[in-house]
Length: 227
Image 1 (cartoon, helix red, strand yellow):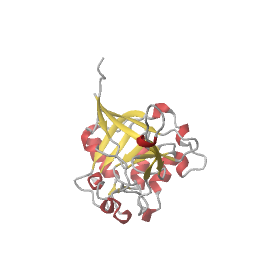
Image 2 (cartoon, rainbow, N blue to C red):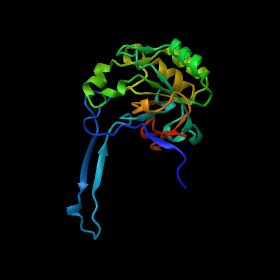
Image 3 (spheres, rainbow, N blue to C red):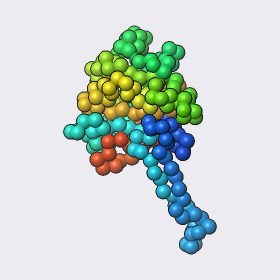
Image 4 (tube, helix red, strand yellow):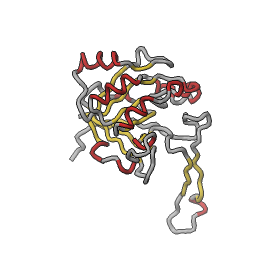
């Protein structure tokens, strides 16, 4: 039986040059046992990875900024597969752009109200800089989301918010989007890839972070599904 959906890769590949919140990457991969050194009949390569939990395409759990919030391992699995809505602001987004309630209103005028239990992706076009880490980080100036927009999206009953930048918040505004979404039990996914391959409505996502006990962030594989 053929799988009934087309799969879209929404996850960036990690390596030692990948952009990150800090100026240095923080990701490394080393070989602790290589094929030629293996004494068993079947040879193996064994690797050791070092990285921040919030690296690459990753999920922020409510516990990331809420001491009593759910950690990554506590998020119900039925919230990790959801209908997907893609709000495209790429034609006007710049490094200081903030997605406003009017952007949501414009989207809903065309496509109808965002439905409860949807996962919303903000497509800014910033992912085009992923392979240029200095430009992608840009001294932490990148398209973001306003507090008012976050409040509006919470009122729509979304399960989570994703964006193709390092964060829906820039540090100069005090992280209100994290506070608003995470304190209401939603999750955030940052550094989304290939959102231009998804339609505005009608797709689904599977958002599966590594299930690490008490983790407030975790790397993940994010997949889009097209009927």
